[in-house]
Image (cartoon, rainbow over the protein chains, first blue to last red):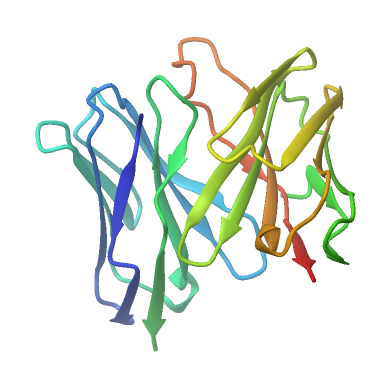
Length: 110
Length: 118
């Protein structure tokens, strides 16, 4: 079945610096890779996603890269701001519903 | 997301009690999901339903049951609650779009129900 490992579990960065979170997987049938952001006291919300026929996707300060050969995908946040502080989950799907990583708690220090 | 509501938001119960968590949505989505969130373990799928007559077990369905009363309502029951079912529970919805893969749609999460089993 599909499984995903997410690292790091916690990440602290200075405001204005970049943050990178990486996820690895093993099932080559995985073909959809979304990232969700969970703010304190709320449910997760989709921030960006990528499909297996694309290597990179950007949306303002957020980007996701996918390396299908190495079976890993990463979330990149540039020019971090205090409101980026949250828990971020990678996820993937292929032949089964979404499987989520264990999450990364990002703290942006002003 | 205000379009997905969960009741109650907080619940304290005792071991052995039967409880029901309810989820309602006004997004018109056909697909609904129940997840459990534990610290350090991420989100794990309990059950999901792709329409009113379709119910599927997720990764951790033991000890839980569900009912899809209508397209807009999906309830999760704990038949006999135990302390290790203490967790944050989320309902989510989605709608498949033409041209998308079977499991590639965006999921919209409710605000969560915090459950404590004593």
